[in-house]
Every structure is written in C-alpha cells, then in structure tokens.
Length: 502
Picture 1 (cartoon, rainbow, N blue to C red):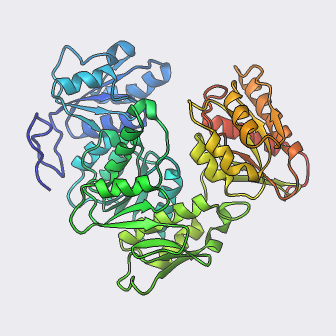
Picture 2: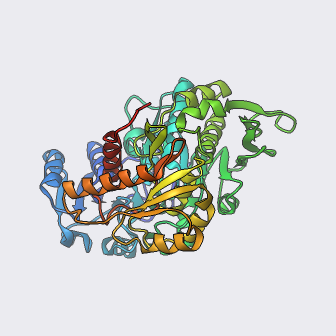
Picture 3: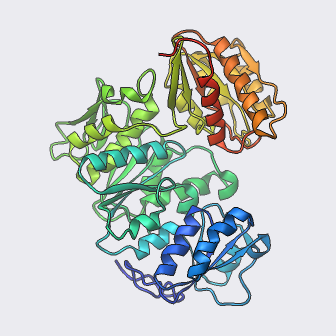
C-alpha cells in the first residue's frame, strides 16, 4: 500500500496502521458511528471535538461518558454551520447522515481539510494484516445479504461479523483487539460518498434504483457513490446480470489487476456467473473447471424457511450474492449450504409473523421504496398489500403495473394516499381498495388504532392461501416514529386477530 500524497497532517501519515495520536479530529454527528469514531480515536491519542446539531438530555447523557475521558462536545445547530474558530482541525470525520452540502463540510473542503467517512478512517487505521473486507451495497437487499454472508462465514469456521450500516460500526470491527478473519460490510451510499480507499477483497452492488437523490444531487451521483465499493477490489466485482447499471459500475471501476467480474442471475449461469438450475444454486465462477462444470452450492429447499411460500426471487438473488462473496474468499460449497440453512430473517425484513385461518401475515416494513416493495410483492402468488406513507416523489406507476396481477386487495395508510390511488386507478382499477382514515396519529394510541384498522381491513380482503403483506413502498415519517414502529404495530395488530393460528 502506497502512502497517499501529502496535503495535511492526516494525509502525510502512512497507512495501513494509521497512527492518529496527536491528530486534531473533528467528528460531525453523534450517532452510533460518531460515538465509535470518537471513542476509537481518543483511545489512540487523538484530540477529539464532536459537533452535533441535536441537543437532548439523551445525547448529553451519552456524551458524558466520553467527556470524562477527554472528548469535547458542542451540541446545537449553531455549531454545525461553520468550522470551529478557536482551534486548528487536521481531519473531519463525518457521520453518514450529514449531506455533502452541509456548510461545515463545505467549509472544511474549501480550507483543504480532508473529510473522511468512518469507513475511510477504519481502512486507514486497520493493520496491514487485519481482516479481509467483503463489501455489499445496493438500493435494496443489503441487510439480508450481509447477514446471510455472516452466517455462511461463521459456518465456514471463520471469525466474522456483519458491520457498517448494520451491527458493529466498521471502525470497532476493524480494530477489534481479538481480531476478526473477515468483515462483512453493509455500506450505504452515504457512507461510500466520503470513502476513497475501500480495497475490498470482493464486493457487490446488488441493484441501483432511484433513492436518496436529494442527498446526492441526482441519479448519476447516487449510482457513482454505490460504484465506489468496487474501487481497489482484488478478487471479484459482483453484479446483477439483470441490472445493467451494476455492470456499468464494474466496467468503470479501478480494480487491482486480476480482479474478475462475476455476474448473478436467476437463470442458468454463463461463464463467470452464479445462477439457478432446476432449483439448485450453482457456481460457474470460482472453480477451475468452470468452462465445463458448475459447483452445487445450495437448493431452493435450503431457503424455503425464508418465506411462507418459499424464498422469493429477491431473496434467492441475495443468497447468490452472499455465496459469491464467500466463494471469492475461498469458502467451500458445504459451508454456503449450511450457512443458508441456518440463516433467519431479521425483524421487519420479510418477517413471517403468523398464519391465521390459512392467511399468512408478513412484515416487510423496511420496504420503504417502490423497488423494495416490488421485490417483496413478487415473493407471493396472491397478496393483500398494506401500503402507503411518504413516497418522497417516487413514481409508483411501474411498481403497480408490474404487480397488479398478484393483488387480491390493497389497504392504504398515509396522510396523502393520492400517489397510490392515482397509480392504482390507472393500472389496477379492478382491485378492491380500502383507504384507512388517518385520524390523529400524534400519540401511541392513535398510531396503534390506525394499524389495527389497517390489519382488520386487510383480513376482510384476504382468503386462505393469501399473504397479507406490509411492504409500504414509502417512508413512515408522516404517521409513525420510524419504519420499525410501523412494523411493530403491524405485528401487534396481527397478534390480536381472532382465528386459528397455525
């Protein structure tokens, strides 16, 4: 690894194994990532100042632990508008929630101060003999894929952990004193924007669809941020054959000589691809005889526990992506099969809640955009769809046109149902529709009532064999605290339904 070009005290220091002692570091944001950055750099001798726009009793309580050790905190919006005037700053490490046009970050760049993500800092601080990095990004499916990969790596006998946008912060995992063998990294476009040196052993972009365009400033910038995950890849850049944007990102990436492009398909795989043949997940990329043979990795039966009607196509593709990254690290097929068999979905991600009177109830509240909802809806034959919320300007027509033949009914949440009702009237006018009166959702009782009404309406539209699916295709902020509360209330309302529970 070469030393980056000089440009300040942070950039002049060699890495891997970056020594941060004495560096004057400004941490912007005090969420999970900000806490980890401040903690890990302070332990190693940095002078740390944290600025955070919010100022709440909870934040002050969390800050007190690090203040005792020597971290300085400045809470409140006024501290986020410009660089501190009373000290020099060598390095800004920003939390993923801060937009690139935030005034303090703009000022830092104008002053020639490097702005890094937690990921960039972790990569530089990690020792040269530290864990391998296997990276995952995409608009949808990241968390499922990264936790599948973690399960596979553990079954292979490796000390591995899912980290990044899920689980541990990357800097904690990279600097763990016991040492991991492999890090399975879930990375958002926000994290990737400020990351220059990832140098993953292998990485995948699962898919790219319109999301967070206001943060990035447009679709091209959003896709480019996703593509950063391929920079410096040493073994394999994994992409979806069905998504040409992901292939283009591979073609544009600056990788280590010898790194290969590996495709994923739900059909029979070509050379250097993983795919599906007669219900079997197979590999034609990571075996010597790949021109004439394929390695069996797992079967659809090994994934059947992931959905009431088996694993949907999006989950199969996620499994293939996890398998590809594991194979790039040298994991044998048997561990991939065992890891997928052992894997269980996390809360709010296509989570099967109950079967009542032959009707399955599934919580996929994490499907907060049309692409995620489309993948979820395709996992069942007949669906009563619980949808709605803040669509953030997304176009719903392609989604409803693609899935209308699966819909047995639609139940709409949200303060503004207009985007859904308009698209449904164009593409699915015959589908029974129930609009839930928004009422007052300013307190817990109002939000609980809203979801209770929605679940009862969905039950009235469903028949045995149907799936009642919460996959809103929209954000939750217009009526709920967050997507998790939306899912929790859905699960609670389902649990109170009368009927025979299977």
